[in-house]
Image (cartoon, rainbow, N blue to C red; front, side, top):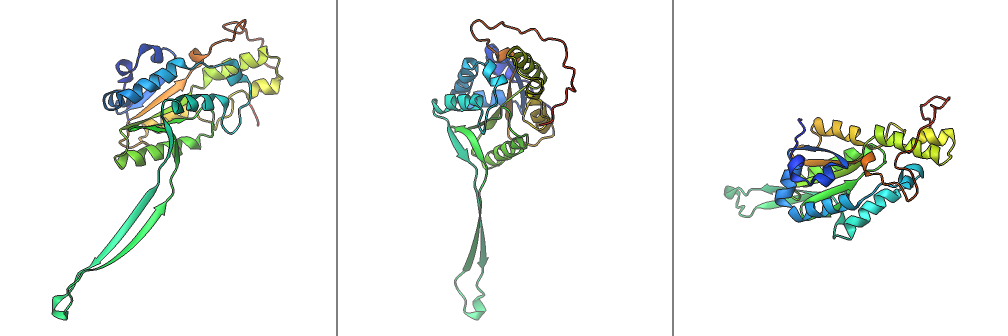
Length: 249
């Protein structure tokens, strides 16, 4: 599936300047047209967000401080966690045979309930997840939920917030060195190959995993980083580490 570029005109320049954006099926234009209030709120959260040194240097947890910050910003604007459940009812209608004196239709029903996946944020007809540095399998779960919601006619499109990879990894390593972290800690910053980032998401988008659901990917990049007061805007990286650059957790 080809990526589209409606975000270049549908979203403000302040967002495009700081984030890496990808979309399928002209997601930005579709959502701006059908859900303008939600898109305005999305852009307000994005323009108000800054990436801090602590986000890159300090370990997170089950939900990193960064993801929690973003989710809280959406909660404050009325977005709420949702879940996709599926209920399938099968009905067998046995028709009467009048020569046998049968007149009524006999009905048998069977219902199957499938508990689905959670979506971080839902408002109006937009679903949105924040996947900063989670296991990349979360992307399959998220996209599957978007596709189910869209096919059921419950949303017009979805947004997935993630991060870029190479530029943030290098920035994180620079900052870790400047903070006096050990070589092992420096190499470990955003280095594992099985976590969520734009490259992992884009491949799923181009192979059409979202089906007909318009999907907008917003990736936090190095351009979102805001140094703390007194911190240099760009750290000076020392000579390369003498140990292997591959991180083994």
